[in-house]
Length: 454
Image 1 (cartoon, helix red, strand yellow):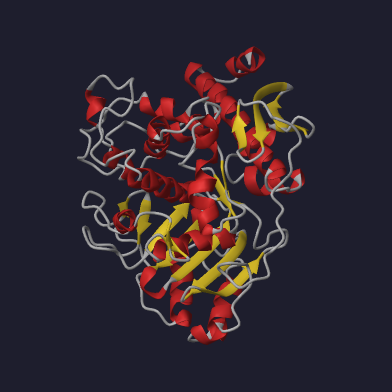
Image 2 (cartoon, rainbow, N blue to C red; image 1 turned 30 degrees about the vertical axis):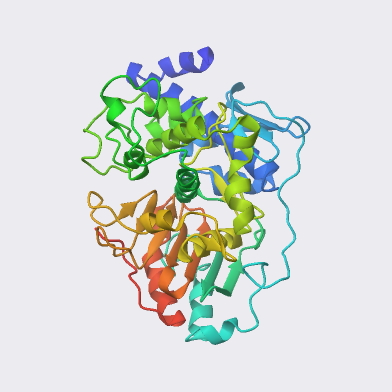
C-alpha cells in the first residue's frame, strides 16, 4: 500500500491520493469477493467473470487489478502493481466474505434441474400454455429480452442471463443465456433486501422482535437510540449514509473494505430525525441484519443455518445462499444468491401471502405489511420492497424486488404472477424493465401497473 500511495503522490494532489488509495482498497475487495463467489459458488470460469462482472462498465480502473485463485484453500487474493490489497475466502454453505479465510476447496452449487413441474420442480406444467392469453406474443417478448436494444439502449447489450415467468402459479416461460440455467445461482444485489425482510418477519412472528423496538445497538447511546426496527425496515432511519455507487462512497467501502458492514453503517451520525424522511440506504439493511442476529436467540451455528432452515428449504429454494461479512452478519443489502427459478419460488410465496404448500413460512400479517407502501416513500416502498403504482396505506397490486445491474422480480399477487429477469449491466439504460413488462403483461392477459410511482 505504501508503494501505491507513493505512486499516487507523484500523480495527484492530496485529495486525489486519498481517493486513489480508497479505490484501491475497495477495488481489491470487489475483485476478490466477486471472483471468489463466481468460482467457488457459481462454478464459473474466471475468464467469463472479468468482462461481465468486474469489467470496465463498473469502473475502468478495475482493469488494473489481478486476481490469484487458490482453489485448495478456497481463497482469492486481489491487487495491482504487484501488491495484494484484499482477500476473500469461501466457506461451504455461507459463500464468500472479504477478509475471512477460506476453509478448503469446497464445491460449487451445480444442481441438476428437478424434472417435476414448478414450483416443486423446474419444469413447466403441461397445462401452462392454456393459462396465457397470447403464447406467441409472450415467446417474442421473452426472446427480445436477450436482444440488443429491445428494451433499452440500442447501442448496449442487455446481458440478460435468465428470464422466468410464472402465471397462475405455474411456470409458463423460461429462457437462459449460454452458461446459465434454471438452477444456476445469480448475484441479486438489492433484491437481497426483501429476503432479509422476510427473515425479520419470521423472527417477529417468533416474538424475538417488535416493530416499535428502539435502542437497537449497544453503541447507540445518543439520539440514534430513537431509531426503531420499523425505521430500518422502511429506510427511515435518518442516518447520514451516502447511497452513491461510485469511487469511495459508502456502499463500496461498506461491502468491500470493512470487516463489519453493519458497524460501518451504524457509525454514521443522524442526518434527520428517525421516521421523518424516506432515504434508500443499504446501510439500514445491514444494520438490520446485525440487530436481528443479536436478538435472534440463536448461537452462531444456528444463526448461520437460519436462512436455509427458516426460509430457503420451506420455499424450495435449493440453490439459495446468503453470504456474510467477516464478522458473521448476513449482508442483507446485497449478497443473496439464487437461481431464477428459486427467485420465482420466493416471489410466488409472497404472492400467496407467505404460504407454500399450505405451510405459513412468513407470517401473513408480515407479508401484508411488505405489500403495503409507506406514506414517506410516496407509495414506492415498504419493508425492503419496491412497488409499481403503489398508494400509501393500501396493498399494492404490483410489488417488486430490484437490484443493481438489472435484477428484477415483479409480483402481481392477484394473478399469482411472478416475472424474473436476471442479468448484469451497470449501465441502467441497457435494460428498461417497464418496457419489458409492457410487452409481457398483455401477453399474459393481465392489467397491472408497469411504471414505478414517482
